Amino acid sequence: MTKRCDYVKVDVFAKRPFQGNPLAVFPDARGLTTREMQSLAKEMNLSETTFVLPASRKARADARVRIFTPDAEIPYAGHPTIGTFFVLAKDGRIPLKDGVNVAMMEAKAGILPVEIFSNGGKVTKVVTVQSRPVFGPVFRKTGLLAEALSIKRAALDESAAPPQLVSTGLPWLIVPLKSRKAVEGISINAQAFAKVVSALPDGVVDVYTTSLDPVDRRATSHSRAFSLVAGGVVEDPATGSASGCLGAYLVNKRLIDVRASTKIVNEQGFAIGRPSRIGIEVRTTKGGSIESVRVGGSVVEVMRGTATF
Image 1 (cartoon, rainbow, N blue to C red):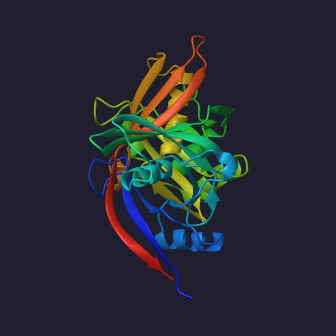
Image 2: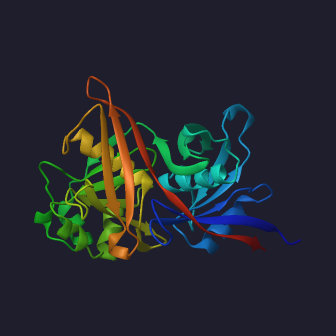
């Protein structure tokens, strides 16, 4: 029996098509098996594909979202959350009023709020509220890390800004470098990169490099994201989960001016021709601890289609 399932492709963290991070959204995934979802994600061959289902009765959420890479289902990711709720709001599945609208997403990572900004009935920005940051160990094998990135070890600031594992829902190894030139000069040594991943906790396969030396002087940081996928290393053009980790790291280390609400603009994707601007807000308590991390940006629709299989 032939199945048909509609999908929408959007570019997240983009002002115009063919920038930012592409995402495929299946707004009505009822009737699809887990195996079929995984096969469709592999067919789309994007960093992530999402499948929207009715929320569980006890979840008190607006939608249940399952997120797949081409190889596996993951508990949470930033740009898929933002792109999915853009589609749901644009298609009238989330009622909108001018200003901020709060929807609730049921994901494997838990029940998470999503803020949808609207003006005149149009979605202007979507923000995902991430989990409070969990700071893991500092990564001490910096010589191996430098080899994996094909940079000089001196490009790392090991005293003020050591590489460290951070999670706001999905763990990333945050690797600050001293200059944008060092970030732009990265060339992945796949064999050494695999050794770096093997030295990280189980399930962590992602490395996020950054510098406080952006192209746009109105921005804060200039970043690149690398992941070990199916034995190869891929670069992601715009990464919401990693940006949340980055914001938490910068605030925690006091590498930027920290306020009660610290706003950061993170550049990514320039090296692969998909420039992206990712907004980050880190809110802190009076005592200085991080209270919440928000990541958001604009989304544009690129195409709609139907999968038939």
